Amino acid sequence: MSDAASVQATRATVGDSEFDRDTAVTLREPGVYDVDLSAGWTIINAVNGGYLLAVLGRALGDALPHPHPFTISAHYLTASQPGPAVVRTDVVRTGRTLSTGQASLFQHDDEGREVERIRVLASYGDLGALPEDVRTTARPPAIPPMEQCFGPEDGPAPVPGSSAITDRLMLKLDPSTLGWALGSPSGKGEMRAWFGLADGRDADPFSLLLAVDALPPTAFELGLSGWVPTVELTAHVRCLPAPGPLRVSITTRNLAGGYLEEDAEVWDSADRLVAQSRQLARVRLG
Image (spheres, rainbow, N blue to C red):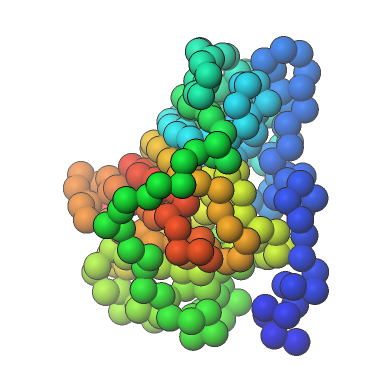
């Protein structure tokens, strides 16, 4: 059975998938949510930043009167670990078309002290109520057909112990951005891929928050290796994605002082730009 046929046969639905279960938050009291961060979304034991953004995004989606994140900015203060966590939210402002809130995720360290892991500020609205008028010069990334691209299953893990999250993704990388895997990085700082969830669940605004931070780092194509932790990440969700696989394009133009930016675009099967992001990340040189 082909990859596409296998996914179709076992397709999960929005609201009933591993991603939904692993990003679920439980209201403890007004503005306070309990969550169990899953080890299934880790990279070298650290929880993926896009997955964490989706977790906090869900808490804010419950706390605010509007359903969808329009813009969400996260500062990653300390590395999150799998296990129990608490999210505390605060409603900053509510309006007719937009509401704004902030949220922080906390865990306890080895000494039992509560440590803030992430702090988020976000504005929410209703993507389904937006006008359909689009005026853009943006174009979808040129990626070969999926059957001509390569996934993590086609080679060794780029970083030992980094496979937990990739087991939960349908990721097919553009061969022209895979020089790093062959020992010949292009130096261009580009990464492009077909993207989805491994269980076939279609994308929604919260899984788009995962998509902007789920590809291998562009640092690999710059000739660097190892963990590239996110310092700050801002994502814009532009419209409700159509069913089907996404295309993700990430570029870096400037690495300086041990930090680089990554600009991401996410396109749906209807050739619409459904999400954008920029993040600042730290790299280990030498």
